[in-house]
Image 1 (tube, rainbow, N blue to C red):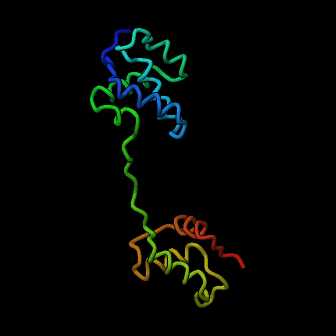
Image 2 (image 1 turned 45 degrees about the horizontal axis):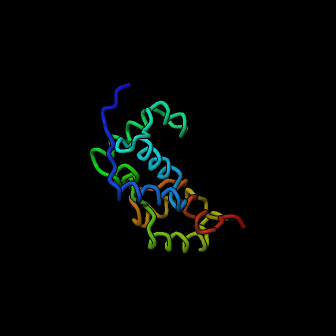
Image 3 (image 1 turned 120 degrees about the vertical axis):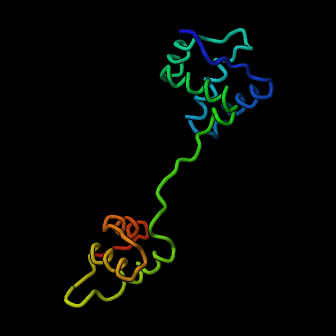
Amino acid sequence: MRTKYHIHLSKENRQELESLIRSGESSARTQTRARILLLTDESQQKNKGTEEIASALMCSLPTITNIRKKFVEGGLENALYEKPRPGAIPKITGEIEAQLTLLACSAPPEGRSRWTLQLLADKLVELKLVDSISDVAVMHRLKKMNLSLGS
């Protein structure tokens, strides 16, 4: 297999990668990426082939190719660390959480012996604290707060 992305590490980059591996404080994924870069460095006479590196580090060939590509296109930081992934903004913020706590600890609605998760979710929507919310989201938040709807 012909290598498309050639790695030439500077002395500073090489020292940084070696200290990153030696310290042991970074994640296993980051350390594996550092090892890939060190082993594919063409400025060293002992660089290894892609298949040999894959078997030594127990990773796939595309992983090695992707790390090489990230290094060539974006530098050392880009190759070692992932960009933050976008996620949904939580519907329940601190203020809404406080209201949820007050509701869960208050007397249940007329005709009910206790609050249910669905009743709490419906009440949050009724009070216009959120546009919509599921009973599962309410359950997860109550669980995080160590609250229980039990007796």
